Each structure stands twice: as structure tokens, then as C-alpha cells.
Length: 262
Image 1 (cartoon, rainbow, N blue to C red):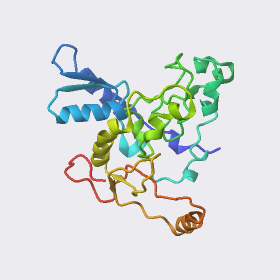
Image 2: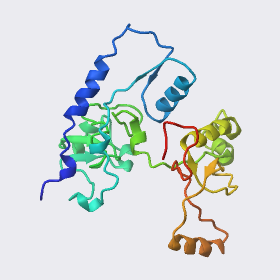
Image 3: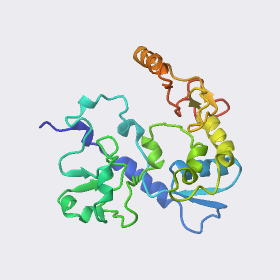
Image 4: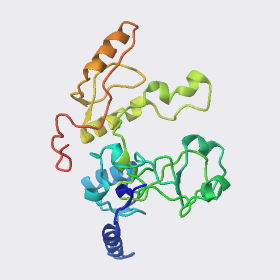
């Protein structure tokens, strides 16, 4: 098989730059009001909000910076890779179902030990350099499909931009089906924060009045194509709805946000 160009990325420059910047911060050289560990969706949002409020924040990230020009290939077709974005034979992603019956640490399992690299199910030729190698960073904790990344921005770098809200049925699910316990908070408690995130990110969607997926503060929705419109009309006769996805994709732009334009 011909060489796969999607696997041949020279990351030496961005790795060296990451090390240089990390070395510039020495313990005890400054005082910080807040230290945030991890720059993903939770840590990144917390650090941004605190910094914008005038709090002096230090963000600690175990991963490196990204070279967006080299590493992002969102405009490439799957056939550009001989394996259609799949990993090479000596790399092994753990299938979602396997987390339930493989012993931890996963890479020590006889079925996986023979592979050069073992990663979460989210690894492909696009993300392979962002997710953790289970051989280098094993986990022995709870057996669930945990995608761990080691890059600035965490898993937000391969977030699909889905922007759904948990609704009242999810917060009180235990009272409905008898399993586990209800959340200690309700949808009404977190709704104001959902609203703030919608405005900050710029989310598109349609107002539908559905309790299970509450409406947000939406920009205009993405248009359905002709096949989707036909399907929407057909299932409407059965009392079903087909709606545009709620997504963190701006369609009207983000007002008063110098950090985001798309």
C-alpha cells in the first residue's frame, strides 16, 4: 500500500514551542488568583469567564499547542487517506462496547498488547496525535468510554458542535423510571447559564417547544435540503418532527465578541 500522507506530520516545531512556553512559567514567579487545570470545554470556559471578569488566571494544560495549518484537515475528503481516516494496522482504537468487558489498564490486555499504540475510540488519522496513548498514560479507573486528549483546548478541538440542552426530564429521570437518583439541581437552575453559553458561542436552531430538548437563544437555523424537507413533511403526518440540529455554528455572526467571528 502506498504511504499515507495523513500520517506523516512533522510536529517537532510546535512541540518545541510548547516546551519553550511551558518553561517560561516558573513556580513562585507570580501570584495567581485562580489556577485552572485543563483547557477543554469546562476549563477553557471557566478560565475565559474569570479572566474577562478581571481575575488573574493560570491555566495548566498537560498537552501541547496545535499547528492548525498542518493538523486541521476538515476540508479533505475521506478518500484522501488510503484507509478512509482509519488508523494504521499497528494502532488500535478501543471500540465503545469494549470498555465494558476489557480489564484495565486496557493496553495490557492480551488482545491489545500486541499493538504499538492503543487509543480511545475517537482516534483516527485526523485526531491520532491529540488523544492519549493508553500504553504511555494507562488508566485503571472506572470502565467507561473516556476520551482523553493532550492538546491545548482539549476535546473541543474535535467537538461536533452539537448544542443540545438537558431538559427537565433528564434532571429528574430517577423519579420517572425508578433508577439511580435525581440531580440535586433542576433545569431552571442552569437555564441562565445555558443562555449565556448560547450567546457567547453563537448557536443556531429553531424554537420547537420540546420539553426534552428545551429551546435556546438561537440564531437563524441552517436550511434543510430538499430531501430533508420531503422527509419532514412525510413524518409530520404521523405526528413526528424533523428539525435542524441545534449547533454551535454561527449563522448571523457573534455580536460584541472580538474573539469569535464564525
